[in-house]
Every structure is written in C-alpha cells, then in structure tokens.
Image 1 (cartoon, rainbow, N blue to C red):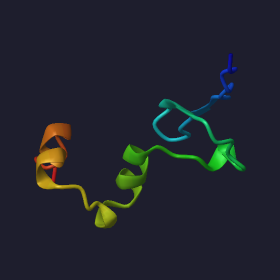
Image 2: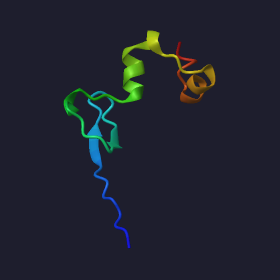
Image 3: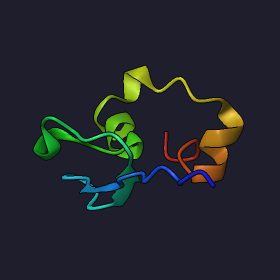
Image 4: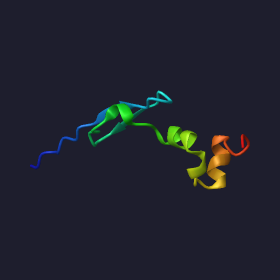
Length: 63
C-alpha cells in the first residue's frame, strides 16, 4: 500500500488588509507579502480585472 505524501501548509497574513491566507510554498520574505486586493489597492493603474469582477467587488462604482 502506498503512503500519502504529506503536504506542508504555511499560513501568512497580509500586512495591509490583515487577511490570512494559506500556501504550500514557503515564502522567503513573509513580512513583504500582500494580498491581491491590497496589490490592486496600491496600484489602481495596473488593475486589469474585467468590469463584471470589479462590479461584484463594488470597486467600479467607487471610481
């Protein structure tokens, strides 16, 4: 019978939004990690999400 491979899960917290997320890869600099929402908040000119996604999140009306 084959053994299951154990997957190690790392938990990190976004420094801006304080959102917690999990990943299987270990981060080299966990203090510099930010969530996707925080990235788009810091860089609104690079926000390339479709309009229907922005509308779902309530971002489209704010602009």
